[in-house]
Image (cartoon, rainbow, N blue to C red; front, top):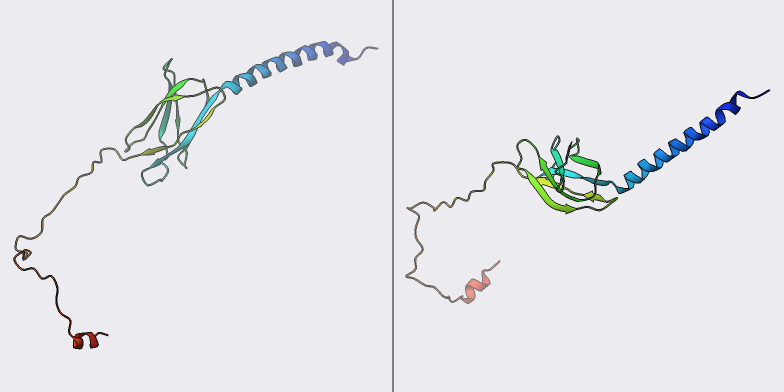
Length: 156
């Protein structure tokens, strides 16, 4: 009497071998992958929620975009090694770009952004005081004076 499992043993063995081969191929690819992660914050170091972070491979122009979470963190996984331009944008903020980032196989790159508010420019205003204010008397110069013994005794 033959077992039912006896007929399926070669088939199961071949399926396990094929599954193992595909698993190793995917594992080898993940070792070469590059990961870029970091935090997007504003000028007060508060997280920028919902900011877009885009990594562009310079040689091919392929782009990958992710959105920051509630803590302003982002993570772009399984990128090809190469030279990247990474930019961060959010509504109400200016765009910040970091170019010519060279990555190698298996690298985990930490890249933080500090976004400044868009359209804000610094102005400096100098206001000169009241015209009726007394001017400095430059005709009289007092260089020193004499302190009497009585003035010294009256000091607290």
